[in-house]
Amino acid sequence: MSTPFYVSPQQAMADRAEYARKGIARGRSVVVLTYADGIVFVAENTSRALHKVSEIYDKIAFAAVGRYNEFENLRIGGVRYADLRGYSYDRADVTARGLANVYAQTLGTIFSSVGEKPYEVELIVAEVGRTDGDDQIYRLTPDGSVVDEKNYVVVGGNADSIGNYLGQRHRAGMTLTEALKLAADGLARDPNGGSPRALTPEQLEVAVLDRNRVQQRKFKRILGGQLGRLLGGDESAATDDEDASGTE
Amino acid sequence: MEAITGGTGRLPAAFLTPGSSSFMDFLDRHSPELLPGRRSLPEGLTIEAPHGTTIVSAVFGGGVVIAGDRRATMGNVIAQRDIEKVFPADEYSAVGIAGTAGLAVEMVRLFQLELEHYEKIEGAVLSLEGKANRLTTMIRSNLAMAMQGLAVVPIFAGYDLDLGRGRIFTYDVTGGRSEERGFAATGSGSVFARGSLKKLYRDDLSGEQAATLAVQALYDAADDDSATGGPDLARGIFPIVSLITESGFRRLEDDEVSEIAVSITAGRRQHPNGPQAPSSSPPQP
Image (cartoon, rainbow over all chains, first blue to last red; front, side, top):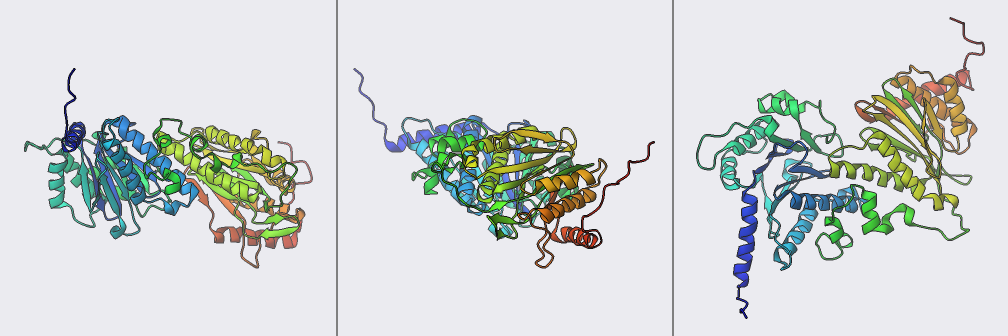
């Protein structure tokens, strides 16, 4: 009969964290940064249908990296949470802080439960405010920690190197064109110091929470032609509303 | 938050269980008490609650117009003079409600959320037929209440992006749905509104003409139905008129509707019965 061997709680948690981190590091990164009119989300994603960035509620959006089925599950849970809360109380009572707390509890419970494997996901929950001072960005890690981020945040495989790049260049009040260019340049960098890759608009998934949108729902995907023109530095494309249908 | 997460702070299992894209189905499983159709009244009891009255809708070249008067009545009392009965359902559709105001407004709130929820979960928008069918389900679930006098009878109007034209659907209390050609009206003043629309409607209306037509029909409904309110020039309360076109839902501003209402009211000083359909047969081509 073999003796069950002892694993210290520290070691068990470290192993779980390591497992989750490895899963996340395999995926491409997502960049979220503030600009003059709100918050822009940029992900490297060639799929047109499987999104890494999504709308949760009026002023709240969600971005994720890691295992698709796990973050999709959390995204749907979040939409259900927000819709139910808004329906029971009022639309104004749905906040990113509330949602981030619920995600943190959910991830934390899964992380420390013996029966379940930890989720290999890293999430961003962001809410656009009335002014740029009111914008909120929360980053959630697989163990259920919540980090209140300012100005920009990166999650995914290459997060540290891209984060450094953004940290040196991000400033308050950038235009959408500038912010998008910065995010795309960050994503295109080679962490090993090689020459940056060339990212085409087809490889990027871009969405904004635009506080100046007249609709109640501030989330908008930036698609096709408009994305190409913005990446090409065309400032006038920022106000271009040709494919504005809320979401597609 | 407690009520929603069951006190654990964590998303309950129902939230993370794969399921349908319908918010109503989710409510049915997780919080059935929040579904309007789940309530029942004791047998034989009738409640007097504010009722909304007349909604009219008409298709025009670039889309569809939907309009409602502003009066809510409770028996012979005017319960409210500025009630809103026309709501955007989503970017390309609207619902106008006649019947028990409290239930109707709740139904609209749930319907709006149902469409938005589907859109967020699926990343795609329901077809106009799909939206109309979801509304059928909601009305059907209210049948027990309707039998006790708390009926909700909406009109659903929208711009069909696939077909490139405006469409109108009407319902009866059992959820029976029918698509209307040209124009439709519901509510207590609908008989008079429909007569008016029938005589004034043409196939080639512009959006502006369709809006005027809708206000004319509401004026006629208010003229003969005590539960329908006419334009209230003294208080500055005008019908709600909304246009849905290729570029989406737009509720006309108060001053736009006021202009239409003032000109119609002035016209009625000359011809109290309103514009006339020709009394001789049109010349043969």
